[in-house]
Amino acid sequence: MSIVKLIRKILSPLLFLNIVRRYQGRSALIKIKAAQFYVQGVQKARIVSLGLILALISLVFLAGGLTLIHTALFSYSMWSVEVKFFVALLLGILEFLGAIGILFHLFREETWAKFSEVENVVNSVVDGTKQEKRSEAGVVNRN
Image (cartoon, rainbow, N blue to C red):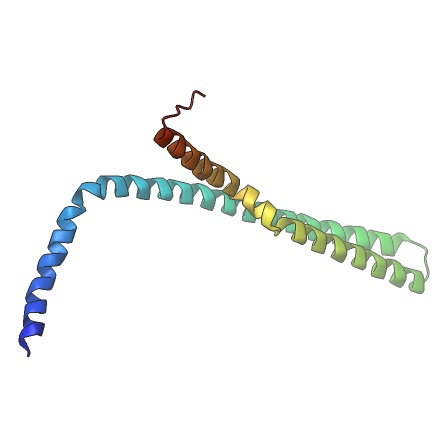
């Protein structure tokens, strides 16, 4: 073992302890931030789980309703087989296009930005930056 490796092996734990001591005062702030992010994470998880449950319930109602409507429409109508086939094809296309439209709306970037409140975060950062620049310039914000 070379002398440089031996010195590095002895000094590296001491340097790490110095770094840990330097940042011990900031541990309270880190704990507060971690708690804040935890609470926000729980809130978002709650919203997402409620959304998933409501989506599943809606899917069950949709499947039941579509099945009943199509069964009643085709069993009680006096149409020929060709007309029933054409109506079923037309209804299937309309329902598929409607589902695609809803999915496009739900997965747009604007919808997710509104859901995750990105605009509020960006505004708070921008307002904070403006506030810092004003206070550096000696201008007081009187809102």
